[in-house]
Length: 137
Image 1 (tube, rainbow, N blue to C red):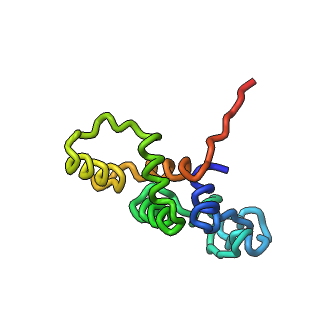
Image 2: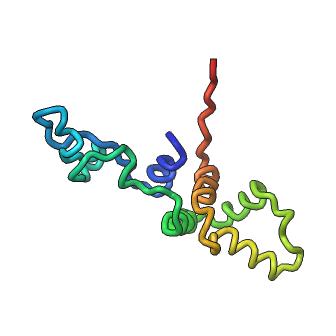
């Protein structure tokens, strides 16, 4: 399971869509234009699309804010802040408290409009997702 699927299913409790042909095509060339549905939740799409389409992408502000909201709903906000303290390099913080808090909020909430995917992946790691190790022979 990749980290995006982990966040979708385990943290947000939503469907990570995987598609099957909704209506069997008569001819093989009809596959790209036949409707498809998610084999888990049954959501229907009118054309062929890749698995995961319709699922969250975790590269935007809405997905990141939904994750932070879920942390709060799960009662894990203090644990998350403690996790940030151990998992992140805070040496760039200005020692003046107000400046440090300003920096934290800009960094955490990506107020510059970038880095959403990186912060979403950080939430997956906080919730216990581990990247699969690939062994090459």
